[in-house]
Amino acid sequence: MSTSFAGVLLPLVILVGTLWLVCVVLGVHGLLLGRLPGRWLRRHVRQPRLWGAGALLVACGGIECPSLTAVGIGLVALGHVVKPTS
Figure 1 (spheres, one colour):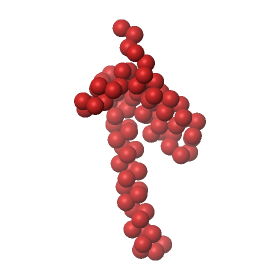
Figure 2 (cartoon, one colour; figure 1 turned 180 degrees about the horizontal axis):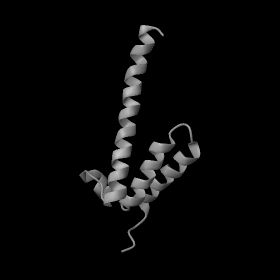
Figure 3 (spheres, one colour; figure 1 turned 60 degrees about the vertical axis):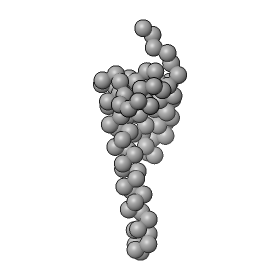
């Protein structure tokens, strides 16, 4: 492996790992607590538990299981648009 390839690969691995970790933390926070951190997420997500479950599925699915990732993206979208029942 050349030095230039490693120089490109390392930041990419760090970026993907950070995005994965953020997705997991936000998913667990939304699923277990029923609310999301930050003003923007609280204002735009109507169903935080549904959104959190979708975020966890996206994080778990990744590239290996595209159907799980698609279901997760669908749940995240539903968390944005579905109005609360109560």
